Amino acid sequence: MAHFAKISETNEVLQVLTLNNSDMLNSDGVEDESVGQAYLETHNNWPANLWIQTSYNTTGGLHKTGGTPFRGNYAGINCIWDEDNQIFWFQKPYASWVKHIESASWKSPIGDAPELTAEQIADINNIYRYDWNESGQSWDLRITPIIS
Image 1 (cartoon, rainbow, N blue to C red):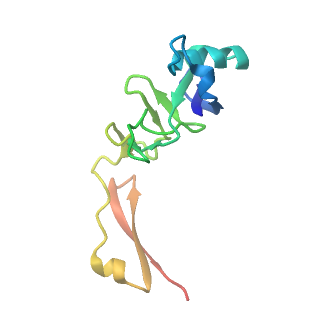
Image 2 (cartoon, helix red, strand yellow):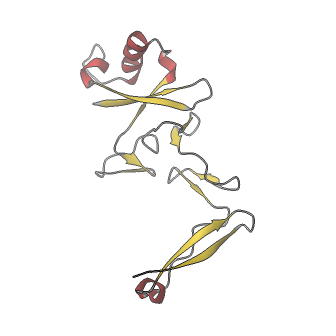
């Protein structure tokens, strides 16, 4: 099965449909995105150029089974299609975050959250995690006691 995202004129994903691979074969019997787009236009009354193929097996710039990643992320409703980078982006989590093309994900302006220490991981009385603080532009440690 092939998957296609129906996008708006502003590149927002509105819907994702599956298509039989046989419905996207060109005259040489090879799968062709443009054939699938034409098929979807005919059967869904939506312009062919606003149907973009997406890969169910691609997330974060990686293919789940080790294959070639396709378009950064599997498209979902409200994702944004970035034609220049050929990536489907999830919603930006914070105003300050920037696109990281290689991982098809958003990153904080100061990088990833710090790693937890061995002591924090081993602590059976608390859960530790870092949360992004947008106003302070920092990763803040959050400690939640485990209630038994």
